[in-house]
Image (cartoon, rainbow, N blue to C red):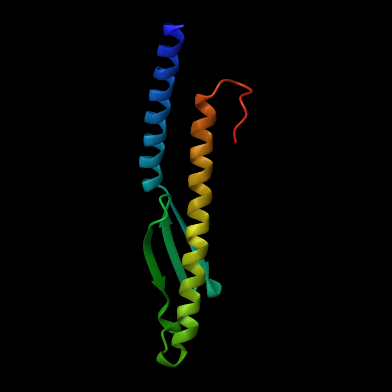
Length: 106
């Protein structure tokens, strides 16, 4: 019984280490999305941090400030959605690799 508990705690420690590695790797993964036909590009990492926003010069018009703001918001939201998808997939894959075969994931 004590040996089973020890093995279970060891597996839990391995799972924690694996999840930390995945978190560290997510900071290195990035996604880039566009809005307005590519005039605004946003890059985010797997930890949902915005890394870069690029705006083409032709859309920088003081008279079209609201349109540009809308394009930036749209691109940022899409970048964060994609970053979350990447993170969710990475975390699920890591958890699945640590579980016994056939064990259901939530």
